[in-house]
Length: 101
Image (cartoon, rainbow, N blue to C red; front, side, top):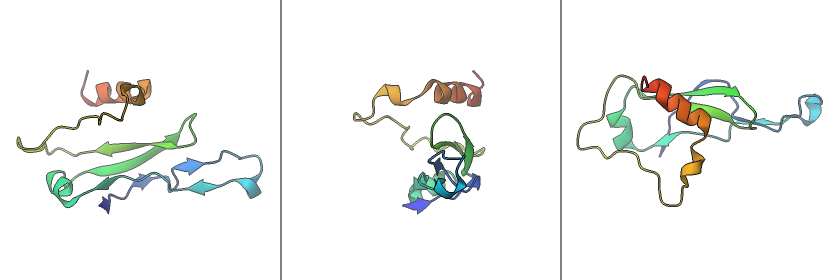
């Protein structure tokens, strides 16, 4: 697996203790990983760390660029262990905006 890198803020997690700088902890805990096959299908892909919201983690936006995968590529599917509730309303609205819906 290869780390896709990122644009934006260096850190993806904060303990949100902004009042006391001595106890503030910032880390890059969240990463986007891909295998060589995926990278060949999406050579223009980029990852952007978006601003922190209410969560202590920031959102990661994966842009695939203009290239569409070839027809033999499998589409993304949630694994049985992942409940549909994992897609937050914010994520769902971003998906609709990205697709022009």
